[in-house]
Image (cartoon, rainbow over all chains, first blue to last red; front, side, top):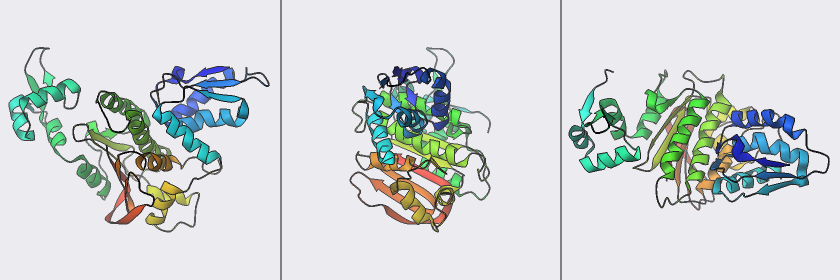
Length: 90
Length: 241
């Protein structure tokens, strides 16, 4: 499955917005088949912050673990956010 | 306050800048004028000019120091997270238009967003008196100010670390300890993110909570925390970029 984050907005900052995005997207996530890869695409995202990411990305990465790939994660705020989430998960 | 308007000449005199600078600021959205028509004369709200000329950090700190809270002037006040997110995007649009910013604007917005989000996430239902945040910025002078009249770092962190005793200790934990595990408090890592960005980019942060004051800048390996007298109610932050 390909998840394009820009479809949730281009400034992804707050915790309530991240939680709402996750809840709204949950029915779609349930369509992921066992063993299927989950590609999360950051293309088009202007700002990503750890509050939003912790509500949306953390549960997906927790559930699908090594099946998750991150694409186009070269925006500075995306990099900094993923780095922090990586530290928290250690 | 009654709405009074100043001419562009009067405004230039008050702020000590040229009329051309005011025209440019108007074009760039830094200080907006009011015009009767597209080609009409520019007028400026006296209140806007007063606030523009005043040091936003002083205003924010005065607000956080008040014994009894009052709502800040509406252009500097976000009563809910939705209002804050909306104004954050407004600031983002202005920053995106500045050529050669020494720090990528996405990092500045993510960092400021995180400080403001923290205020809402940790204080919802527990504000001291006035809900929401003070949020102001001066793009020309390159600084951004946030403040809240919430519980402050110490009381917030005592929920997960009951042994914390001082604002100084709470500041250390907030900016350095990664709180892992999701219960009972999944939040609480936003200020680590702030520290990671400040210490690796040409930025300065001043952060006050209770009677603790932190000054942080690029390359800092340790936190410089001093005593803040009188203590603030909640948190006050200023980012220089």
